[in-house]
Length: 225
Ligand SMILES: NC(=O)c1ccc[n+]([C@@H]2O[C@H](COP(=O)([O-])OP(=O)(O)OC[C@H]3O[C@@H](n4cnc5c(N)ncnc54)[C@H](OP(=O)(O)O)[C@@H]3O)[C@@H](O)[C@H]2O)c1
Image (cartoon, rainbow, N blue to C red; front, side):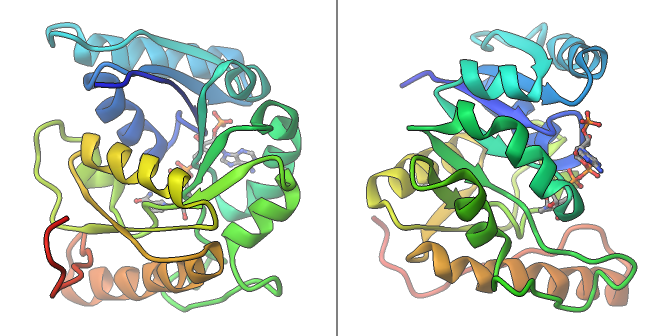
């Protein structure tokens, strides 16, 4: 298996923590990024404790966001939409030449069960614009509930739509989705991310209506690759 150093920006939060947990379990070196070094270290300590008995878990460290991005081979961005711009500005330099996995959904509280897209069409396009052409932005994981990821070994009944303009970068994210226990389905160019981002509000609406925590999506009819 290829092992990489993956920075999870916002890895102190819900979905970032879950992805960090699953990637570290598979042997990747994971850097938890936060605005505050003590919060990053706290989350890293917590992850280390959870993985202590697992064999082959990768090294885990906590760093402030710009340092985490700069030290990583790949960067995952897992912060709320309202925090997108300042966060990306703080890591822009460290993302150049790297694959950046964007998990951001453009939710506008309090009406998160209603699709409210930004004027730029999608959060992923905003990310590409803020990071510049030097970053290979791939959007993914918008339809996966953090609740499922946080439980190691729990099978997640959800596909991951993977959108990006660089086919090789999309392939890498398909592999990382598989390592997190999910089937990644390539879904075309970064502009298509709008569909995955909008679906999240539909899933939140379904969660509320059915009083459940983690609805997901499945793409049917594909031949196995
Ligand atoms: N939760 C899910 O199930 C889920 C599923 C799919 C997609 N998403 C998307 O993934 C992203 C992260 O979701 P989440 O639920 O994991 O978020 P979260 O736990 O609320 O926040 C993640 C981290 O972002 C940082 N952050 C929060 N507010 C910030 C601010 N105002 N400025 C800068 N940084 C801030 C915090 O890290 P520090 O304070 O340590 O810096 C926080 O731990 C969102 O765009 C969300 O829509 C979430």
